[in-house]
Image (cartoon, rainbow, N blue to C red; front, side, top):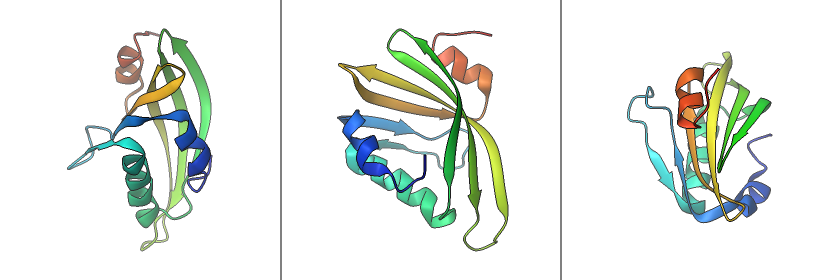
Amino acid sequence: MAAGDLSTLLELCDPDVEVAEPREIPDSSTFHGHEGVRSVVGKLQEVFPDMEFAPAEFLAHGDRVFVSMQWLGTGASSGASSQITLFHVWGFEDRLVTRVQAFFDRQQALEAAGLSE
């Protein structure tokens, strides 16, 4: 998914959705609502204007979905290319996304989703 594809993503999100950055990021934040989704994506696009997320694995458990993905981007000021494996846990209620928590650690994400290896 390219970062510019927000309209489809927002259609899938509850109006009160929460998006939480990985705790390891200094001054990490939790963003609220559709405006919060726009804010977190905008924040990332300022630093990595060409960022992309390439999902690789989905594991469902109850109302949560674990997602493993490759995150790709080029630094706006440095020109340096970055690629990391990132993990999300998506929470759902009434078929809408209510929470997205990002993790750098696979095991932490699996546990947050109620799963294990």
